Image (tube, rainbow, N blue to C red):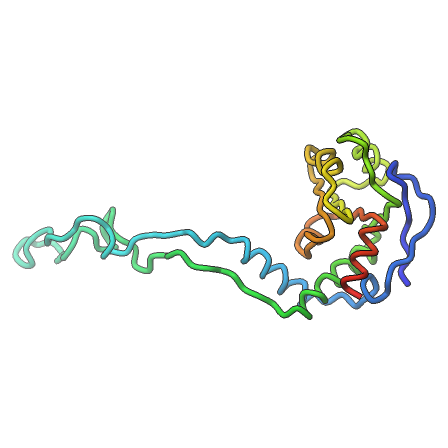
Length: 206
């Protein structure tokens, strides 16, 4: 079983912590990671872009000049694509970029991302991360002790005090386990996760 350091909320090591082989010790599958990240980013797109074709641009109903005898190229409308203020040839229209991947691939990608953090020594497990009130200083102190800069902090439940404490720190994000995703795991260099959150992750992905 993979073993990582166990820390208190001050960032001091207090022992070791064993992780599940089935979640944090799998073979990293780069293909699954790629497929899931592409799908996540595609699903974030609004898809509201829109441009007009020559049929939709206002005006241009009259022929600019007669067909023959002027010495100029023949033209049928001032809204043809070659004209300034003309319509687009293949105008983009609103569309959904949403895509899906199989549940088994999503699970494999999540396990692969978590395993990569263990393999690269980029995961820190905390005994707990309970704050009586929002205190940015306490989070900064912990991150400094762990030498963690670009960091994702994962809690078992939504924790407003932790969120407010970390939101003004550059390169730091806070997520509850329910919102944990492959993209954020790969985006942030370090992963700080509470013991309770680890239990929930293992409960879902074992």
